[in-house]
Image 1: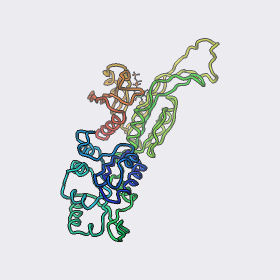
Image 2: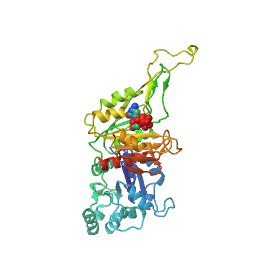
Image 3: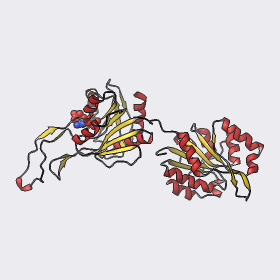
Image 4: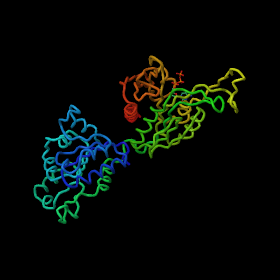
Length: 391
Ligand code: CTP
């Protein structure tokens, strides 16, 4: 539901902070990428360690913690949504004023992300004219408020002021974030290296790990696309990814060409063998028969078949080169792609098996864009940004 969505959870200092730990857990279970800010007050009610263990990373508490030169702007830029639960009367007052003296309020000031506050306080505090003014101001400023509701309060009283349950806050987060910028798009990704059988135990293969293609499939899935991932490698698990496992170029071609109906974008990141043994032995070839001569034949060009059969599909090809990427410009024209991603697979920071990649994007009209070395996840994200912009 929230797979890969970047949620910043701010916890201010009220008793309901203990429920924020459960909210953090629910956000993680929904697949969110979670960062947590605890105010000084919140730390009187829940421990940093609890939230860090749930989020799986350290929590943030200070504007000047030395971990980052500018934690508020880093977090503000990172977050797709900022949730504050519980939001105390004091927190609402400071947020309504646009105050920025601690990490949470400074991050809110620095961010353009939607914000969702779940107030929690005693009934008298909620009903104070000052709090009414503050919550009205926040709503007028575009803040989403959820709750508070009527119910038992910690003082033993009963009234309005109780924080809504974590699952209701989670539902609001899902509603506000919406389905993602690739919702409704149908996407095909090929990944991994093909294996062309020689006999039942041997094959001709290549060094592709499938990491780049997997990252591309996962990013699209997280952004709401329906993804068909045709791969020879281990595939990522995501509800929007339908995995088709293949081994050979022929299997990859058959799978790809039968998945073209209504296809918006195809990204051909697989390293497909160009040639295969013309004959596959049914039995294991015997060493005593001496060195075999393998007569090779061409494999189908999966990408060319997609271009031919589905010209309306936006087609992204890859070019694994060794050394300079000049050949890629000619390849972009020759392969009839809309975009070609070229990389030099002989570099230590790029290509097969690495977690980073340094690529150059080429269009058939010869325009090139050289990207710096980035993680494969970042390359995937920027690649989709580019595809969405160009198509
Ligand atoms: N490709 C494919 N089917 C093949 C060979 C390649 O779909 N049988 C796709 C790859 O997935 C990639 C693109 O074509 O997206 C370019 O692959 P590459 O091997 O670099 O290109 P080739 O056409 O094989 O060119 P060359 O061998 O001359 O470098």
